[in-house]
Image (cartoon, rainbow, N blue to C red; front, side, top):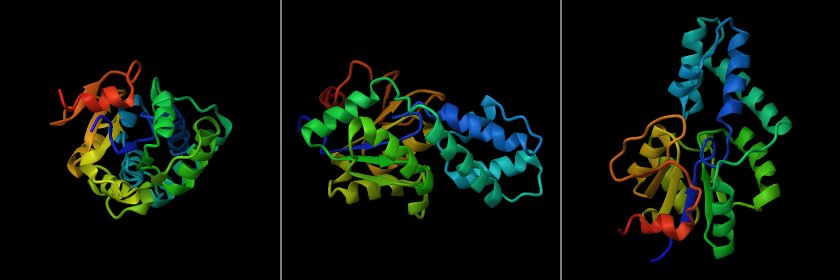
Length: 219
């Protein structure tokens, strides 16, 4: 097999240069609670899921607001940014999605982001690359990343064995999820170092295509 039967793609930091939007949203929410959110806080929360991030924010803010309330505020803040700001693709990501569509390879977004935000983002993305085959949102699984469930559900959604899927991630949390599910995993290091057994680590997708990435697992 010279190429995967499905392409499973993380969203934030993998397909899109959107971590800076999350950072802006996190800072705005935490400013309201008198806490100065730092890049170190963002790095700690990288990869979600929302419940873990909101709980961390509640602990840091020492506020009377619950993690549920803070989580809703964060979703609203980032959704607004995805509407008003330009969509910026990570290097090489858009070309990879376009190639998958040309080859007829199913594409599935697998993200810890909730459906309410994901639909907003995907509406913007499809303007440039067309429709993705399917998507799995963080609030549509019982166990979010780093549990393998999101990636297992992604493979099921397109009827492809997980071992014949190529997953692309950028966070330790997401990489653990994809690897535990049994996918072939490319981790493109971005904001955090990744050390997961059996995973191929790259610095960029630039210069790669679907066949060259898949070949990395047969060499």
